[in-house]
Image 1 (cartoon, rainbow, N blue to C red):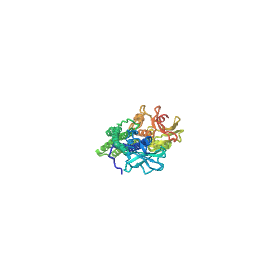
Image 2: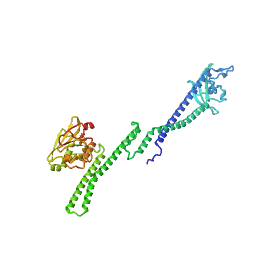
Image 3: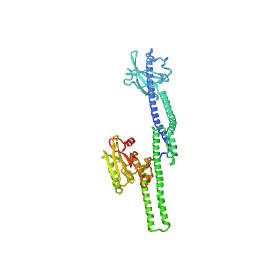
Image 4: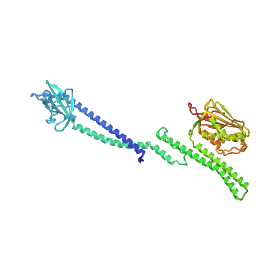
Length: 489
């Protein structure tokens, strides 16, 4: 089980930054110390080699055949290491000590000659004197007056170790100071980098159900904060749409249910005010039943409209042929067609095997509403023409037209007929008005499927409803709005 973190993101970023910097500084300090140690060792070796070369010119044999060193010259007297040099000279043939510097105080710089000591140039090694002093020395063979000698010259390591100790202490002191400064800088940088997040947080806190139209400011949509703000704005947009749909559904339901409920209540109250005959009660009950049926149809339409609004584009889509779906709807309306003696003629123009992409159940309802609307406003013994077509300019679009012989659409109402609760006048349509939700549902369903629906405005008689849907073609891309709007039937 993950425990909730109590630290802020700013603090965690600073800690991560300081932790990584600590590792880097420790590694860097170790490398610097190692490099400095190596450099100082190389420098000390170089100085000793130079000093040995200098000493070779200062050695001489006195009158008693004793090896002596001229003490009136010092190589680099400013160097403490060179001034405190330790030196010992041995005869290679006998191993006898020919010379030993006073700084050794009679101590030996080695027990006898080591194998090949000084033969191959300048041999370096570390050695501990009898009193425990650690030295770094070099050995070199030198020819002098026909004799072969080995010169051992060394420096005490006390000063060297003291210097390296101070250098290490300086590094150890510098690292915490650098980390403290880096932590302060990291905190400031994190605060500045996350300042837009604080502003977004304040803006998000101020957004409620009453101002869902507000959006977060996106300073840079390319960075992570900008992408998060964009995603949050998209979420707000979906919430606003959901709230709008809920509000709209509530308002529509209140608007449409008020009238039939009032009629039912008024009819019931009138019927109960005084004793009435059986025929009068039957008439009152039939009125209540009629209004109840209209109320039930309105509720079903509102629920279907809410379902269509809640469906996201592309959700529950399948590929299916469109003509069998229209035939299925015509079979459902067969009784109504026979009652009005309406003949259906279907015309297929090169679209026999065209499949469309969409929610079949919702599209079935949409075509049912369109056909029912066409049949309702068609006169007796008329013809309803249904045609299917695909156009060369837009083969990815299937258009289905429903052309009836009714009174048609009043000019200027071609778009209004798709509004909710819009009812055409009886004079114009020749039929009693309905709930006004059928075409609104059809428009919403078809547009969610990626198509469109409209009425042809260039007709002299009747009404022609045109429905265009995207065709399911595996080797082609989805049609855009321009393609869906390009065809006319």
